[in-house]
Length: 138
Image 1 (cartoon, rainbow, N blue to C red):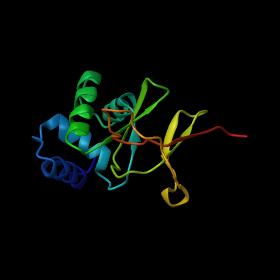
Image 2: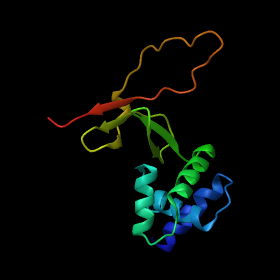
Image 3: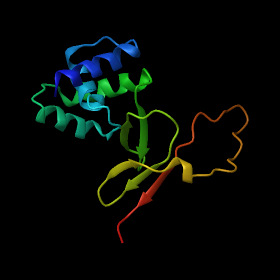
């Protein structure tokens, strides 16, 4: 990872008020260092850190991703009830889930129209609506 990538990662953490530890900066640089949006799993980010010769345990990756979500830096997208993807793009937008590849990508938000959603039950409020469109190759 370039020095510019580490600087971008450190700035990203600073904007959220997170302490820029070495491991956080290393993971942040992998997530946002090139300015591109990403969808990662803890396992894929751990593998990327190993490929970049960063020493970060899988448990630290999980804890760091959780801290990034809590700080509003990432959005967690659940797929299949147990698999989590972490998205660097935090605005509301739909996703494509490529079942054959187990890959998550952004779907065109301008093509999605939600006219009505059910009312929340008594004593509850809707916190968020996730739209994940599952795809498979023909």
